[in-house]
Image (cartoon, rainbow, N blue to C red; front, side, top):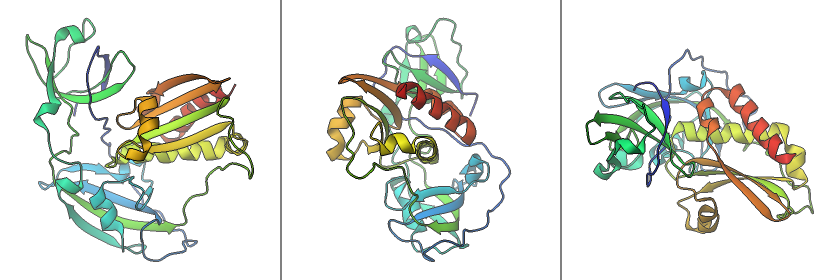
Length: 305
């Protein structure tokens, strides 16, 4: 996979952000006896452990990426790829299932047009890429992109911006750890309406088909807000929203923020003047719960001042 490096890119139309997991020791946690359901169904919030493999047996991802913590998501909320969600429906606590998911129900087809050759002038002077290296790039608008270097030549650097699992059938071993009620979240006090002229918006955008890192980031961002900013949410000073950019009903807010993939935006509005910023730094803390939470907390506190 190579070492992830960040470089400056002057212009690029679109790409897909992906974080591939590292493997560490994993211990299966005991299920929570407070679960109110024994069979997973639509709209249930579940916790699962999983190992994902390709048809040749290669492990491409695992819940071990998260330090052994189960992956939590709500069935039917478009947090996971369709095939994974469908596999979980009907499972009971402590059940383990093996499932084969075709590429169309995973990360979709592989597009040749997502492989592009970028002129050397597009990069910072002195940048020396290595074939197979995973690089993260930023354009002049602050948008982040990630791809794999395929080749270098006098003409430039050839980078593959396809999702690394695009066009591949996937296999999962899934263990149902817990079926829990939907998590409590910070909510507005009755009768309180946010003052949209003076508020901080935290906007997390995503596509319908999502990688586990995207789900992890949303869950931990929500947990941080619930833990540290419940009063601000209740008073209407802070608003947190997750937006599926492929849902046509979200087109207005997608256009407002210029969202195109899994992204985080923070918008400080003072007397109607908006200060929108795409937050990219948190992606470097994927897999480190405490560091991610601390960084997110600091960013939100800064904007609430």
